[in-house]
Image 1 (tube, rainbow, N blue to C red):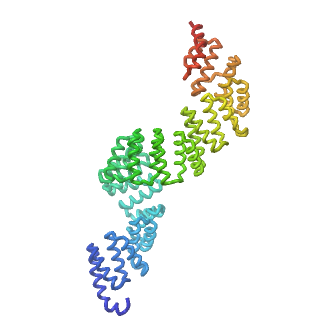
Image 2: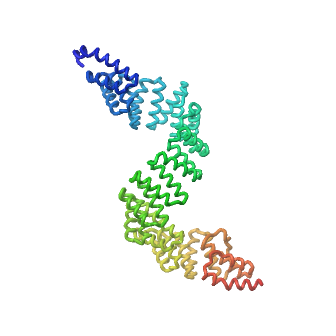
Image 3: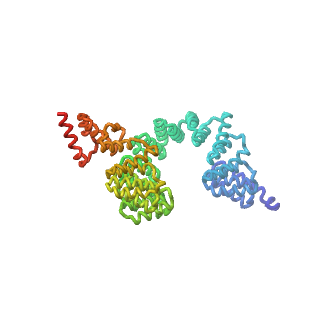
Length: 537
């Protein structure tokens, strides 16, 4: 503003500032904005008008215009008034720009180091940018000056909670609540702290109290539902999440929790419905689609599961896990070509998934789905013919199917330097089934040479001794130490041994208590049982 204008407009500006500031003081913000704007039309560099118009804009939530005035003032005079830094910090905080908010809070703090409100605001800004130690130092400083109030204790509790110092967080929130027992958000925070301390009943009580103080806050019902779910109170959890959804039917997290509750209650249809609602709210969230696909896979609804996985690939076409699951589904649908293509793609994106598919083969094996297990291992071995683990389990599955020749052929393809005790144990099993006792003994000797001696090995030795009639040399293995087929073999051997030793009561008892005996074996053992019964009578 040049000298002439100062003479002409100087007094006019002073008069307008008095009127404008009076409107600001009386909270007539729009009138204040009009007068400050008139002043700035006369002198666009008037510092007081820029600051106070920014305050007026901020008061009517016009953050962008307030920010423009303050940035202009900063260029003209960065030290005009400490409040300009305070107001800029609040604007950035409102815009979730915590870094810039902290920057201006620091400037404000440097200009007002003894002012409690400035110190509190700076501590809060430090907390929001993750500078927890500095935030804690400032709150400690306030407490040493006897500035004991709710806001400081609540902030201090938040800081300690963020540092996983839950004991300290609980102490501070208890003190905060003692100063102000009607702040619903304080009880909510105490509930979250009590969850971390595993004080679950106290946590439920805290959320209940927060709800009584503010029954329209859906998050409190959500937090309550989560802890009720954690302690196994599913009906109450479902009731709480229903209430949360009544208040906020557009919250994805609420539908996800409700879906999980239904899933836990084996209500897959309702679970899928809630996952679908969550997906409608955020269609690009592939994790929701993965959950839906997993439920359908578990229910053997492979065609629809395949559709869900293909939706994922339209959103994210480099998701290795999805290709892996597709390969598994293709396999289940007997689509070998697509299974191989998708498995190769999965392994290309994440080599670790090759081992994961091997695990699928294991699962099918342990579930007794031996043919499916063989198919999976065939596909894996086409992709990697050197994978010893796949060969071992394919051989085991073939043995279970009674395909001794194929089982041995698969096993024999393992390189000599890769042959471990698993190889020799399996080899001895195959030869034992073929009644090739000489080859069985050779493999057993190799296991012994490797320092491997266990109940299974003892069992096979017993089997050989039965064949050779060396009953006195048989080592008894208590049945309760064994499982499955091994247990059955041991029971048969122990029964035959008792029979050969003339202990017919024991033999009868043991023959009658052999578990899971198939018809063919039962037929072979019937003469032994009949003879034992005749000797007893």
